[in-house]
Length: 453
Image (cartoon, rainbow, N blue to C red; front, side, top):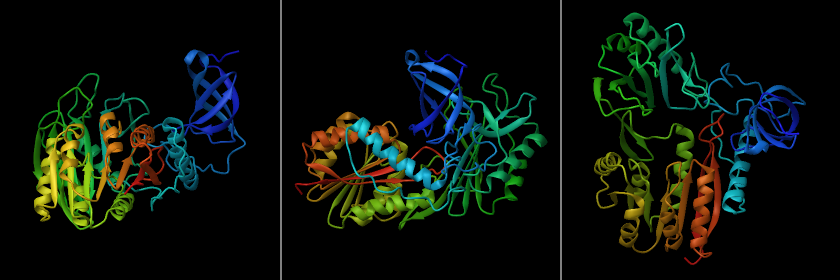
């Protein structure tokens, strides 16, 4: 007998899926039920039936035989907000889950069985993020609310705090709400397109703060500036005017209302300039550990090729550590930032930035290198183009270092590289990094070594 929608069922969680949800097999169906742990007995309601009744997605109604890995989630919005997946799981169990997730994904998708190192933990289980982007909307009573989107929706879950963000988030939320009350500016309604306030984005850079308020039209921000001055000692403030209907946070219309809109920062001996749009990893502690591991694989006697190099921060670090480093980035704005970074740090001649798609520029960059070579590849979540993975497998590099926030695309790309190399490249290490505690996400670094070099 197959499951029916809204029916109640019971079973024991046998394993965890890629999003941390429990896998329960009963009634001839494999059900995926979030917020449950292996070994627990779960009564759940089937909310959705797919694949001809072979799969279902459910909501736990009652849990018994609690796992020793279970802990009480400290956030009252856990299960409502879509930000965290694993607060019900002890941190040691989260690390074990992510290690197994990487190993099983490599095995299932890539057909690759590798020993995965223990996950490099974050120093802080909570309060680790240096950046927040808060959507601003209205509730049913027309009151302005700030919070986070519910899972798989654009419905804002109103919040006064977020435990994975820094403590200052509470004061920022309070300041924006007061600003709305005093001025009459309201949160943006995506359905009616009414309201002026869309998002507030705050980034901390070494004790300095970049605050960007996204609005539908130019407005007076003086009241908000006075509130922010009570919170932050050193901050710059920008208005971004975005009246589009899309989901992109920022438009290209900027007004700097306080300070210069950017701050200088230093990372591993490299000075860089960061603004509201600059990509910087949100976890300072784990970012430093990840970059240190990459640099430890590079040598002073080699040339480095940094693919999908963004604003060039890692390229500059590699240029300083190696004979020379090439950065390849398709986004022109990011490539221009890398040129500025090169100039600022006196790396002219050692840091060469190439603007263009990796699949178009890779051959030329590889032909410009000579001798011992290391390739670092940190593609977006969708992974690299197949042609890039094939070319990497055919290269004569001494090492290829892959960085990925998506185990599935990592497994796919790694399979292509190793198959195209015809056994020349083999994995020397696979190391997950817990960049995002309390969530299902994991960053992974794979070092491939050329056996012929």
